[in-house]
Image (cartoon, rainbow, N blue to C red; front, top):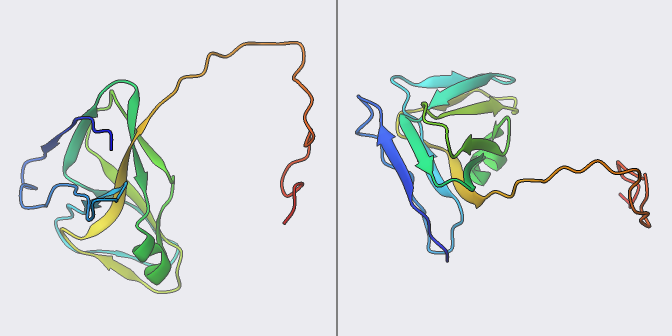
Amino acid sequence: MKQIKMLVTQDAGTEDIELPEYKSDGASGMDVRAAVTEPVTLNPGDIKLIPTGLRTAVANGYEIQVRPRSGLALKHGITVVNSPGTIDADYRGPVGIILANISNEPFTINRGERIAQFVVQEVLKADIQVVVSLDETERGEGGFGSTGR
């Protein structure tokens, strides 16, 4: 597997929070933890920004994607609202995770709890070119279910 450096700093008072980590050799996402100072309850329908206590840096040409944890999504209806979220290579501010509770039950997030995943991804930039027309395809203008259920 290709590796690149991901630099992190921990905000003061969050040194007790474990750093993001891969839980298996084949994992593409590393678990990231909540750096809340006290438990935070997400009631049904709530959307809240949960701090991680981290600031990150990756090389230009890469991003860190923020994705939901499948277990939290399936078992508790907890998801990342802007999934996948993007942490740009040049962002140096505090990283927060925008979580939503789409279940019918309250869910409490505790300090140090795994709340999302980081996936480091290569980024391609588009060279936008204005043209008179686009090539024809079999699908054409069909969208939103046009190719089947």
